[in-house]
Length: 341
Image (cartoon, rainbow, N blue to C red):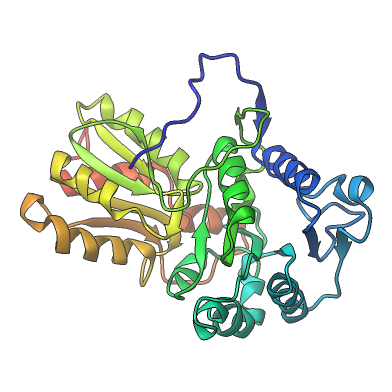
């Protein structure tokens, strides 16, 4: 099922991606006293990207507070609070640091409801920041969502617009299951229409952000914007791309993807994460299982090379997929020559 954003022609105020995150948490905390925020530097400093700014001043240091530099302790605090009846939002500053607490995340948070026969609720939201582009080097720039979606019991979202930030964050915090809300570091300044009132985007619903009948681009996060740039360039060549923003990575809305595959007969998956073992491989497998007879070509993928993220800006720019690489991938998929060659 697809969901559409507010009509940009309507009189809807504009917020940045980061401001939409902050406003949503503020509104949720005002509505529900069981919600609290904990993490490294989320209190007085307002978070490394300012996404928690003002929450400690408004709600006090019992509902928005700093923790020691211990990801295991942060996730453990969240799990214990959640099963005790609270609704914690715990922040892991960089996605790379999720690995320090993967035992708690994968063997405790994700499994408790199952281990207690469905009787336990774990309304825990883990927020984190992913992606390259800030020259933060190999230990602060990774996109590790493929590790998280492989764990039964977790829900994982990665919004591409301010509108999606608000709707998906509200849905995550109100969910009675453990959720992971991933922000992309390069999107915090992105502006877009965001209604003032709280609303939810159901977890597990993709969004067709551009319709077309030539090829389907399946993507998420910052690559949605890069795919849109590529689609504009390809449209000038007579190639009309349909772009699907997954929004939710687990559960995955494969029905919207396969419906588009039956329409365009060609699929290319674009993600910033390393191509090998990435989410694109899973999508390709499911598409060929469910819509193989409709495909006129193998499912294609665009992703990062199998390498740590470089520190040097020039190398990092070459590492991260962009619109030009999406254009090249679509042309290869269609067997089209590069204009001028």
